[in-house]
Length: 244
Image (cartoon, rainbow, N blue to C red; front, top):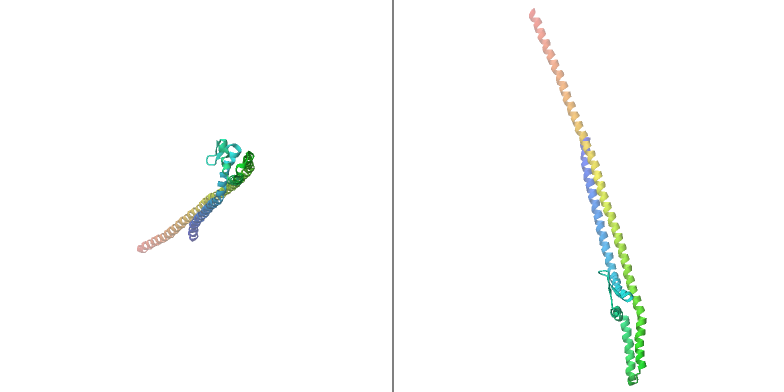
């Protein structure tokens, strides 16, 4: 009986151990998931400025090459007039600086010539502006393409981070679910074993109780028969002595 009680107590203790282990394991998975998300946010935060720069270059680049501006917020294109198409180029720092400096130098030369300035000199000024625009146009396009490329690289890296984090979180969630399932199975098996032990202990107790009652009844019945036999023997001796 003592062994049965010990087995039952051990079964309940094991059940508590399984519950505690599963709970701590799932808490660990939850902590890992939070760390994955925090790492993802930090990584995306590092890349965000580069993505913003790249997106900012897309609209003027699209305007110069296609005549349509691009809105990164909506993903839509808007048709532009010729003036609007080249407005960003003419306002770009590189072109504006070189144009202003060139025109300033030319203006100094004209001022020095005064009335001697000819129509040819004015024509050269116009040609200078046109030549500057032509040479600077390629530089402007290259700069925009480089900025857009930086944004594209940052976007690809962000996508990789998001995809990798999603995979890690998915694995952690799957591990947590498997741990919970294994815990339920282990607890069910342990409880079944514990209840079986309890049933065996109860049956054993019943058998012992029945055996004890049978022994008592058997012992008491034999004693009663002896007593009855003695009484009958005494009664027969008295009858024989009275006949004499």
